[in-house]
Length: 266
Image 1 (cartoon, rainbow, N blue to C red):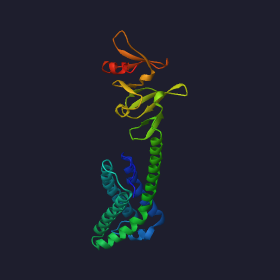
Image 2: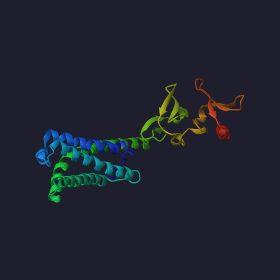
Image 3: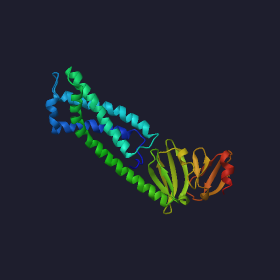
Image 4: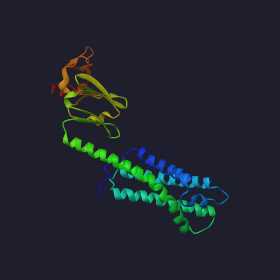
């Protein structure tokens, strides 16, 4: 089976699983009472609702451990679909094992394996649905990534800017780029579009911009497109600025360490 092209490397993806699966389990069993779980989970003097919440909590704790582990794995390794599906089925099995242990301990006796069989009968048919739904969303995301990658392979003449989560946010022709400046946790991309100067704030680091076609570093906090630099000048304090060939663009600071490399390109 093909590899998962990209499982998001931020923790929100795993958090969605942690919250969706146990809440779905609660809602579904309250509405439909599958396999008469309501009649089974009346034990030890506590009602059905108490035990349902306890099993949902077990599912949540299980996912906190397994999804946290998966988060570390996907940052280092690619997974195939078969491996990922097996992982998800394993999560359900672990949740069933702990739920069976809870049932046996609460009843103070009983056959563990019989309780495990019952727990699997309650858990697998119910929680499989949020897993299937979330996997379908992942498949759609991967298809979008494939299309995006195909477009990128077909047209390598454009400069693409990605945010901190590696999501494509802006595509520009190199000749349209003017400069890029640092803005706290963002970068400000200044460019031309249809003859007008536009700005775009992108949540990314300056390091991620380095190497972009058409841009050269001129300052610790700035990249500039030499094709749009009219002249380099010094002010009365000896500070160097790049005057742009568009009047409405303010001068871009140039550090002494980058002066020679930039002036050689003009």
